[in-house]
Length: 470
Ligand SMILES: *Cc1c(COP(=O)(O)O)cnc(C)c1O
Image (cartoon, rainbow, N blue to C red; front, side):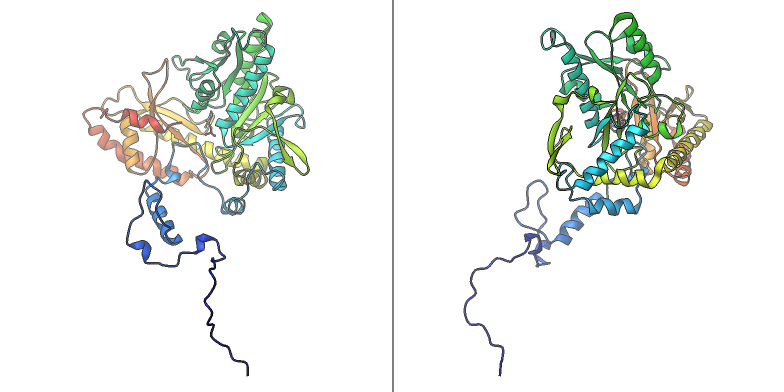
């Protein structure tokens, strides 16, 4: 009769043939001592305990849907979330291992080239990035390299390259100029002009100008810069002086708004002087943070020596990027959103967002104690300040009181030559529904009686209040 027997021999030393993540079974051990916060703990915690510790701490982060400061997407459909979860292990640089992800990136670039009216979409070149900042670095590098090649007799040597732009540009351009040693030539604000105008831009250009950056639209007030006028001023400059200065359009927000709801506005590759365009897929491209795009009109605008090659299906694929490894999920989510919405869908989403921006700005104007600088009729973004006769509170007070109710609305001071002007700014995004907008106006009306009873502005947190508007 076969009976099972005990096992007398000592077991040889053996390791658990499992991922070490699964090895911790003691549910009590971790409860006796809190792990250190600023040094790596000595040992592991059970996964559920670690999850709960991190989860609980994060509950104190603001609610992203009430964040009216950010341009970045805070709501996507559950299906997009599922796709992103399915792709979270994919590294964008591994073109050979994930050829379909690489193909989706390629299709997105082609769709954007078509959307931005590249004269020959099949000739346009472009890439995904982590956001507009990286895209702007790449575009700026291409401008600088093209200029350097044309001026090899003077650079390096006597000439110092410069880049012309409005003082309202996003901080990434300041970074670009600092990191790549380019002089930033800034057109200041003047009176009621809060962005760069064509004449001032042309006036700052000389033989060392690598390009002009036109912003669609400005983060300060949501206004579009006059890209076509800037291009014609540079055409006139070329006729007068022979200087041929390319334009880069920083369309971080507007390049995914204007094509759908301002179809008559000519700002893109239809203007022969526009050599490159960037956008943030994670702003009005409607994807969660982590994706931007940079496109050049043709390979002539992107010096070949800046392009590196990686393996792809036995051949090689050109890449232009600052990072090497980068998550692929956002690129997949961008393709999903393009496929999901199409032109009509994007139009509906952006029009709805802009309608809400206009309604909210009108309702704020109707209160009587505020003056609108912009109305949300370009980007769905508007800036406003207190009316001239309001002396008991200022924009910083309004920002602080709204924050008590969960709303993040930045207050900040404008740059030169309007340092005298402080504003509040509201960024409307998909997900800020008409109902939420109504609740926001209710809350603004709810904090005003208190503010009217102040003896004057409470002046204490101006520096802190300016920190979250970019
Ligand atoms: C947001 C923004 C940027 C920076 O983009 P990120 O995607 O956040 O890196 C650059 N320029 C403009 C005009 C912007 O609005």
